Image (cartoon, rainbow, N blue to C red; front, side):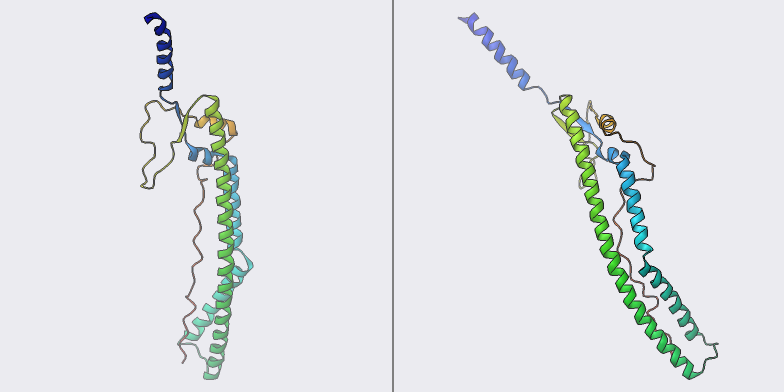
Length: 214
């Protein structure tokens, strides 16, 4: 009777032991992979080119020229040594005020245009980064399943306190290089990194000051 129970008990013990085995854990440096993707380098170049195009828009060129013209007019009107008769001074002042109103209208138009374009550009960049992260996650998951890992953690992750999410791993099984190889990634120039969101254009009020009428 006792012998007949030994085999089932031994089998049960082995089953429990196997089920209680610690899960296999691997890590992946997602941020490192993201920076090494060729698509990241290309996306950053496109982003930079589009930002420069916004800054060189015809509205901005016209605005800069108008502001320079206003500065010259203001300096002339404010020059105490300038020999300008009263009638001419009044005429120049009226022209200055009209030009200043034109400048403000153009400045507002460019600011609205710039804000709209930058918002669209940021939305595009976020979608592009999300697409690449999805590709990285899918590739890491595929490799982890093929190699029998139960869990995979992003070892480049940072918590909301600025502390790395993974503080310690006794024997880290890092899959980063295998994911990079699977994606065919190459390292871009060191300066390449996901760009920061641009700040909205600041309003320039230096030409808002009305010249002193004499």
